[in-house]
Length: 160
Image 1 (tube, helix red, strand yellow):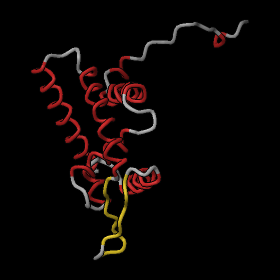
Image 2 (cartoon, rainbow, N blue to C red):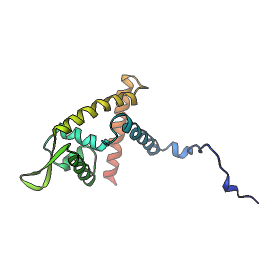
Image 3 (cartoon, one colour):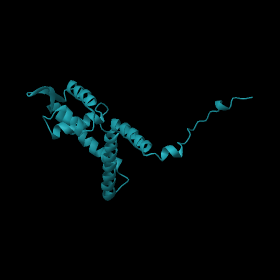
Image 4 (cartoon, rainbow, N blue to C red):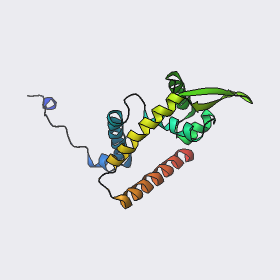
């Protein structure tokens, strides 16, 4: 009597319909593909969260880590780690707030500004590639749907 569990095949099984019908599964697929292409197209050493923090610091220099974390959808402990890594790379400086020694205010360095500028150009080209299958009206609609979905899902975390 042979072992029926020992069959091998070279093609992986298709994901089950119950999985492909789940929005979380599709979001995970999108994010995994996005990360893979980000590394090749934008920057192999600057992560998406680091890029987001640099964008936020450029837009609002001198704000504290906690408010920046909220602006870029990071929890405070992740934000502290991201800020520390960016500081170690010389891309930002963290200064202690005069009125509260626990608050760290964030500023871009000149190197941070240059790094962000260069990465931003590549990221915008990536955006074009990501949405290439869709015309301008559909792109706007897709971005609206993605934003609405993200807002709704974030609201669910607050309800839990």
